[in-house]
Image (cartoon, rainbow, N blue to C red; front, top):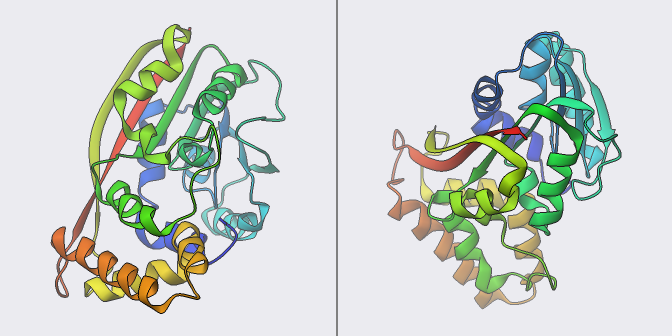
Length: 258
């Protein structure tokens, strides 16, 4: 799914600023061993490397790495790229000083398993930082809008935006972390001149949206209904014409491995 469309372009156009926000919150320092889980094209991994971290960018979709490597080269950042499943990371226990994920690990279907992996690979006293879309925010509401048209979640899977619920994340990490902090923030998106432009951009570039449209492609009424629902979503959040901006809410959680 994530290899369809053009997620690297979407990340660069709309949310590249979130990577430095996460890196700042975790406090990456020169010499830190840093793992970015579900790194995509590196919007957290590259800033961490520019801070002097020894960074591994891992993702289940290595098709995204070429764009990440190009962007890292342009920025003058050196880091390692590794194919890896967030629910079964191929790294040693306690191997990293900081483990981060920017709107990435939230899409691993089994949340407790993925959280356990974040904990396992982080050394005692190391830092963990996770940035996720909230259920109530724009992207969380986009997933809610698409849900009636999407395939049911596999048995045991949990909805991605739950990672944007503070209580859920606290329960996932439990007593395995200290100094946990969570705060809601927003990123401003002013890329789109109209609700229709937003919808068409996501239909072209965003894997989850592409997957939903692929599922209903044979039913013009369903396609039309989803088209209209996404336009109404953007309009209801204040996007009507050129110059209007969307505010996308996310939850930023930082903690220290106990």
